[in-house]
Image (cartoon, rainbow, N blue to C red):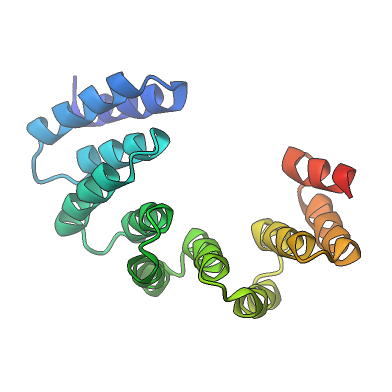
Length: 181
């Protein structure tokens, strides 16, 4: 089986929740092509599904050493650091991912960082800027609805969720949030 086929098999195992198999395949990929970051990336994603943040960061450190220009690796490592409450490291990784390719996922995680770092007003301002700059990114509308709901601003939250619902009518999370309001 080729490297690419093995990688696809590992990703399928991860999607199916067979984490032991995904880790075995990740290690096989690392042996097959030690200079390829994919095996370390698969390992890191699997550890994150298992809520094992430190091993995920270690695997991502290796992936980044091999492919330092891949924003997804920084974003994923930042998310793990956020879970371990290593907030300044998480912020650096999210900003690096944004610098590399303006990663929407990293922008969203930077908002989460701001919330966890008691910078709620900055998170709101940041999200409003994101919505103005990219009004078609439904995730920003959802995050703003979540922020407004947590702040006790139900009507404002409803307006953001309703906009998200217009953009993504099948989104079950948004419908659930609207049902709760």
